Amino acid sequence: MRPLTKALLVGGGAAFAGWVGWGIYSTREAEAVPYETLRTVDGVELRRYPRTVLVETTAPTQRRAFRRLFEYISGANRGDESISMTAPVQTRNGKSISMTAPVRSEAAATDADAVRMGFYLPAEYGPDTAPEPTASDVSLVTEPPKRVAVDRFSWYAPEWRVERRTRQLRSALEREGIEPAGEPYLLRYDDPWTPPFMRRNEVAVAVAEAE
View 1 (cartoon, rainbow, N blue to C red):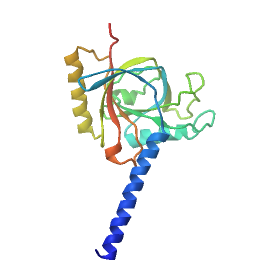
View 2: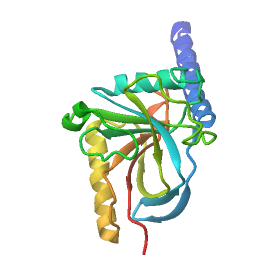
View 3: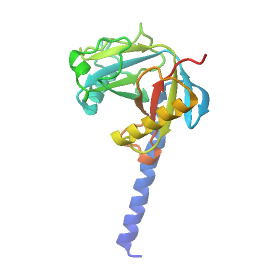
View 4: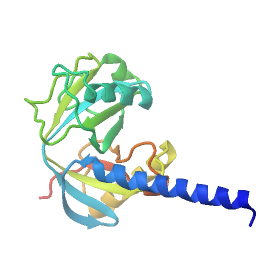
C-alpha cells in the first residue's frame, strides 16, 4: 500500500471515529425530557409526559426559528440567564396546530409554510421561574401532563420521510382504536453534527386518555 493511500485511510478512520465519538458525547450530554413508557402497540410507543415548559416561536424557516430560540437560551431573556439546551426539539407546521398558552401571530395563523418550533426547558424551570423572553416573537408555553403516541426513526428527517412516518403512526393508532387528540409533530434529539445513523427522530401525537 502506498504511503499516501495509507495515510488517507488512517486519517479518514480517525475522522470517522471522532465523528461517532461526538455523536455519543452530545447524546449523553443533553438533558432529555422525562417520560414514562406505558406500552408498545404495533411498533408505536405510548408514553406519559409530565407538565413541561417550552420556549416557542413561529418563523418562515426552521433556521430562523432555531436561531431565535437559541438566542433565548443564550441569554436573550429577562434574567440574562444562560439555559442548558435539552432534547428533543419540537417542530410543527404553523397553520394546523392549536396553541396552548401563547398567542399566535396573525401571519402564522394564515401561512401554511410557517414553522412552529419549541425548545423544552430543563426540569428545574417551571411556569413561574422560567425567564421571560426579551424578543416579542418568542413565547413561553406550559404543556399539561399528556399521553403521547410516538413512532421513532433514525437518519435524517426530510419532509417526505416525516409524512410517511406520520401516515404509519396514524394507521397504527387507527388499527388499535386509539384516538389522536391533536395534530402530529416532529421531535429531534440530536445536534446537526451527529452522524445520521446515530440520530433519533420521532413523529408524535397526543392521544386520548384510556378509558
